[in-house]
Amino acid sequence: MPRRLFLRSRAGVPPVSRQELGSAQVFYPDTSDIPLTPGHTFPAEKYRLLREMVVHDRLVPEEILAAAPPIAPDDLRRVHAPAYVEAVLTRCLDDTAVRKLGLPLTDILVTRALASVGGSLAAAKAALRTGFGSNLAGGTHHAHRNFGSGFCVFNDLAVVSRVLLDEVAVGRIAILDCDVHQGDGTAALMAGEPRVLSVDLFGDNNFPARKVPPDVAFPLPNAMRDEAYLATLQSALTAVAEFAPDIMLYNAGVDPLYEDRLGRLSLTLEGLQERDRRVFTFAREKSVPVVSVLGGGYAMPISLTVTAYANTLRAARAVFGF
Image 1 (tube, helix red, strand yellow):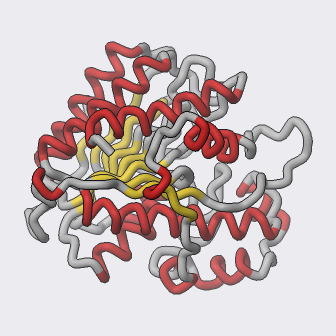
Image 2: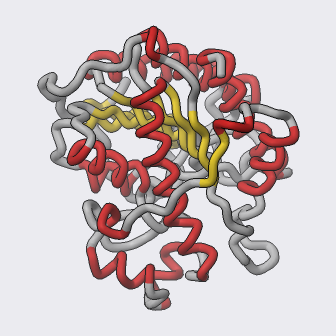
């Protein structure tokens, strides 16, 4: 059963009607791979491999695939401490902060981090126009106000939420986080914001060691398989439906995959794709614009992660018809 901390009153703008759903927009960070030492836990090449698969397999029409714009630093400062933003942008994080981040603070990493958040915001604005938007990056839910963590520099889900609330007249936002690792940064940054509902399905015995309770939590046991996971997902979608959001931000992490080195769950590729299909079908049926971001994925071999990421787009295409 979920642990529900609080509910909120309804406010905001009406969702996009089913008739208004049209061509989606898919963004990607247009940089080279993050330079890492051999054997590093983070598979930096997965983003490049995914984009190559998207293009080669023609998963989306060429005209809706676009390089992500960088996020404006002022938008980052809506949720992150100005001193932290400045330290990242000037490559001045101290050694302790870099170790906590888990990635070397290189020019490529900073450029990619800005594009990752910018891509999620652009995808959200596209979703409000068309019903669906996607970022082939993002889901950086471990970044907190004044530090990065778990390979996450800036928190795109929190930044996007704040920009939409402040500038785009969106009244209610649901964040559905299906990455296997609990979105501690997102929960902390959105705590006390009644217009945002964070719903999180995560491995109870996994990173981070200290969980930050979301609004609705679904802690999952090790080795959970497809059927039980999908039943839990239905409960999560029910919580989203009760909140009646104007837009849903969907962290479609694929690290629940059985072969994932950091996952500890036992989902199949088919189970993950069914998860995505159900999320998108729910959004379409409820006429709620939805944004998908990548989240985690660390399978061995990494081609399984890339396939799972691509399957999210396949599911979206099947539901929205772009």
